[in-house]
View (tube, one colour):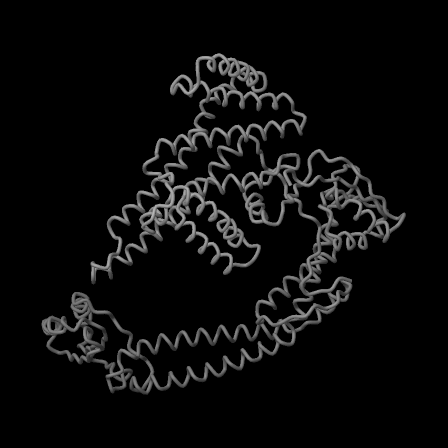
Length: 621
């Protein structure tokens, strides 16, 4: 739980002829993280014709699947690869589906074209004339849309351009007018300048013969015909979907499984008659793996075991910590020999988050929003896990809210009218809060270096382990000296004791890290003081809540002003709560990953990824 699962490195040696059966057995067991064999005396790699055929059929089947609509599925019994390939190649619906897809695209393009034409024709709906017949050898017809209030200036401007023109106008709505302008040849440029100055929008005249109402009626008939044709095409696609969807899902999963098996073969080392597979298996599962392989292959297979200095990392925390393990793996996977910081991370971040948000009302709101995210997102996904983490963190927010006596910025006395207890009110206890957060930073740094000491001991790196103890002594002794010299917390005897511890600790740091290690002392002091941001972030949220309660708190005597103050009050608190949640999560994570984890956690591990067969549409053979 506090360390990744111990791994055993294995080598599987067998006959080349048994390789497909052994790969199948390992795939179904799903216990081995396969590594590429790096023995220089063995061959690796080589793509087979089978692999190329599988990839080709997968590409084609995915393209076919994309054209179909999802249907209910049932699981089918797995089949040998040659039979799966024959069935995939015999599925001859891709050509017809391609034709149907092309026709759908053509229908959609035609419908878009009709919609555009219909939109243009609607401007001319009040003109009962064949617009296509208006063009003449001696005149040019222009159409446009103009603000109604500019019609009179436009008429005057056109009269100046030419006395030989005809302007017909119809109101489109209360503010706009559609017009048709017929003007003598040779005056078009001046007419267009006048139209542009009036702010007109040019309209395209229809080229088809018939009045606008007749053309609109024809377009409606074409739309109806397109709709019926599209329904027929979709019905045929639906028929193919119902008939082939289940089979296609089966074929795709079967080929994906075979692709994984063929790909993993390239990591095997091989000679003319034998092969070598290298990988890692969790130590608790090693006996199960050996027993299963022995039962199936007997003396034809040899499994060799080796101690692994470095291996993939498998974290194994209790189920309640699963979302936090997910976040830990998402940010930085520890190496196999490091401490698993998931549980420490969980409790530390929960305390930081709760201490910063620190309002029981906001904590309840945080609880409700987190529950909504968990309910509306897919289990196991990023947002779902973040929602679960947020849900857990809401509980310490409520607890700290009770300690601070804050409920949406109010004290319980203000809400209930009865004083049940006296809380640690943040606005009246700023020095105390800063002191407590600095002490929290001090304790966290000591814990971080102690975990670093344990990590170095587990790696048998005793020199650096001494350095970690030196840092613990430096932090504790430095804190005692500051408390004694600046605040007279302890008597003169503490100066001598703390000074001695500090001197020994500094020597330990120099021994482990050299003289340059002392440069880090101001940085560590800064890390400790950085925890005062817990108080700062919390106080900013308190101040905003108090301002809202003082300025826009809805009161019955406000009358109609409640229409304004109530939404402002609710939105203000919601915004302040969300901002406080976000800041608490970001700043709490920063304190964990930057200040705390840097003292013991290196990260950079490789996640344990077993060669495992995932089946949704097939039954194992």
